[in-house]
Image 1 (cartoon, rainbow over the protein chains, first blue to last red):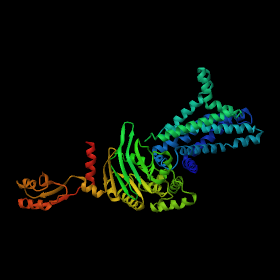
Image 2: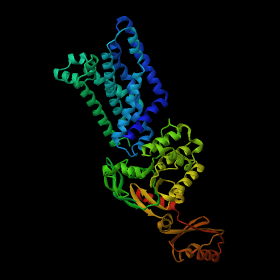
Image 3: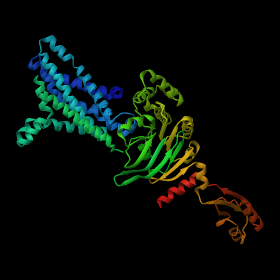
Image 4: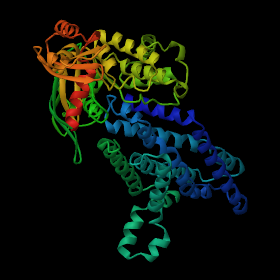
Amino acid sequence: MNRTITLAKKEINSYFNSPLGYLVASVFLVASGWLFMQGFFISGQATMRGFFALMPAILIFILPAVTMSSWAEEKRSGTAEVLLTLPLENIQVVLGKFLAAFVFLVKLLFFTFMIPLMLGSLSEPDWGLIFAGYLGTLFLGAAYIAIGLWVSSVTKNQITAFLLSLVVIFLFYIVGSSFVLDTAPSIIAIVGKNISLATHFNSILRGVISLKDLVYYFSVVIFFLFLNTQAIKERKWK
Amino acid sequence: MIKVEHLTKKYGDFIALRDVSFELKEGEVVGLLGPNGAGKTTLLRILVSFLKPSAGEVEIEGMDVNNPLMDQKIKSKIGYLPEQAPLYEDMLVVEYLGFIGRMQGISEEEIDGKVKEVIKKCALSEKKNAEISTLSKGYRQRVGIAQALIHNPRIIILDEPTTGLDPKQRIEIRDLIKEIGKDRTIILSSHILSEVRSTCSRVIIINRGKIVADGVPEDLEKEGKANTLIKIEVRGESQSLEEKLQSLDGVIGVKFEGKKIDIEVLKETDIRAEVARTVVESGAGLLALEKQETSLEDIFINLTDQGNE
């Protein structure tokens, strides 16, 4: 466990050793803040619903940028060979990388604290809903990260990893959209609705944190971390 | 200490290693020699548990690499430098060594001391606070070796530690390997023969996934080539010289190239004195005479060519 945390710390530091980490954080904060504030004064409501509704779309670009290098770069540069011959299990390495990206997401969300602070000073927002929104975003983000890490583990190039993660996450998201649900045959629509990242996120946003949604996000994360571990075990890139 | 038995590794249809067996004793410094693509890296990767063998057995200090329960224990016994010394470019040298040390299970109290120790041993003091991306190839290689030494493993495995270095850096790394090899088992791979000869007490030559020779460099040189070559140079010409040389005891063949003559002689026979006398008596006039020793180089080329024909 110690080694997993040592690895996670090193990974987090490496996000901030390069301009990329700061760039990603800035883009996230500026884009989410700006897009939210645009609608905020028009609606005139002290709610963060609009902010959280932006998260699935914004994080689709942000989190793949965080995870793209995780494995692809290790494989390209050969450092994976050092990392994977250190005395720890493959799963520990995968968890360390997941933990690092997740902590990065927590930091990103922490820096949006100005918004609830502002709402609190303006009026009496529903704190429960805001809490649910943050929680939902963390779950959604964890799923994005797990998918992004897996894609990175099966590619050797960061740009490919970025674009492919974006596509995979988008597909996972879109299967629950009304466009798909209305046009697809009913069985596919039911499956789509249940495996979609969007369906479960929206229900959390409404303030309902159900066991079903939690189980869903945990399953997605575990499933992709498992695929990631398998990909690493096979050492296919050599 | 290391026991390899009937090891085979396949990648799809391609057989990278076939039926490789050898045993290493504690304290040996072994050079793994072979042309590019011979299977050296594959073999080393199996020894460090990076790759799993397709068949055969590998034991590291009595532990089977095929046993997943032993995996971490085996890994912690070994220090490994992969080919090209891959490092995290964005880290400082001390940071990187600290990271690897902690991952190897060194405690927080001990880590600074251990990092200092390997920095000193690998002569990295000058660059310890430099970012790895700014280091020269020689320094990178030293960081890679320092990283392999940090947890004080009994076995060190170095994949082409001197490839890509300039001659001065190569000598420095070679000295460093000699130094750390005093109290450890080392396996290093190389395709540079002089290097293996100067650092290793034993050489394993591998070609197309097979071991073609295994032994002490000097012994290999002695028994390597079947025949010895005596090269002479004469001033004039003499019709009967070829016949006279041919009739000497132990001579297998004589080849004339103008005034230079190559005489192939059975191994372990030294007939230089007889050759000299014959030439002088024939009146051709002896200008030079030299016995060509079989070098590790010849054996290497000989052995690796055979497989390719």
